Amino acid sequence: MIEIKNIYKKFGKLEVLSNVNLSFDKGECIALIGPNGCGKTTLIKSVLGMVIPTKGDVLFDQKSILNEFEYRKNIGYMPQIGRYPDYMTVGQIIEMMKKIRNSHENLDEDLFKAFELEKMFDKEMRTLSGGTTQKVSATLAFLFNPDVLILDEPTAGLDPLASEILKEKIIKEKEKGKLILITSHLLSELDEMVTQIIFMQDGKVHFHKTIADLLDSTNEKKISKAIAKILKNKSNEQNN
Image 1 (spheres, rainbow, N blue to C red):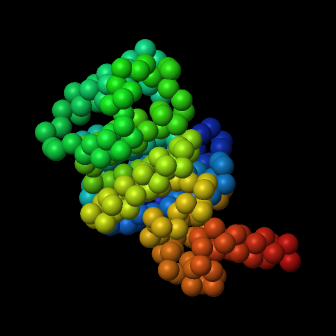
Image 2: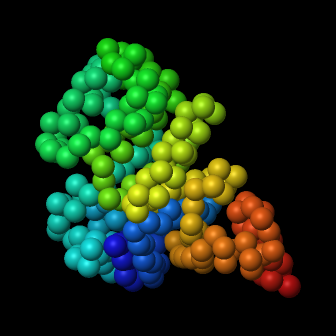
């Protein structure tokens, strides 16, 4: 569904992506992890068309996205930190997005209802906590029934109940056959959701494995412990 082919990206002399090749298919929930500055956000923004690769291409349904924008209608994006006009209300933001998207599809209001956003409809965005702003961002990402969901640190700032509501929604959408790409530093939260994991470092993909292969190869039962073991072994190899 999405192919990333030989992507390189430089900002000045700084190379933030180097020869990245990846393929994402429907029905997968894929975690994109790695240390700060590893290239995760630049890679996501390349898929969204917000960053133009220095070299390489991104294909969506076998068509290049370069100089295209229509494909974005099939993507729901939840940024790590949502930026909204301060003096617009929650209701105005949601209605504005409906008009911009001009979607005639049935809207997915599961999260709108689960997060009880109707109670905050008249509150200005500048008055909301970070967690409540995240709820608005999550609701907008899912609202138009996209085939692809890209969620950047989706549970950051959410209270435990809201975090569970969102995780259950992610699992539900994956089971419908949607492609979901998640970045997260909270590896303990990924176990129930993801089917594959990609680890990036220094702008390169170090591995792309199914969760079954990852756990089997490390003889661990949790993603966080498996990743820790791989990194420890890699560090030992470099020091020897």
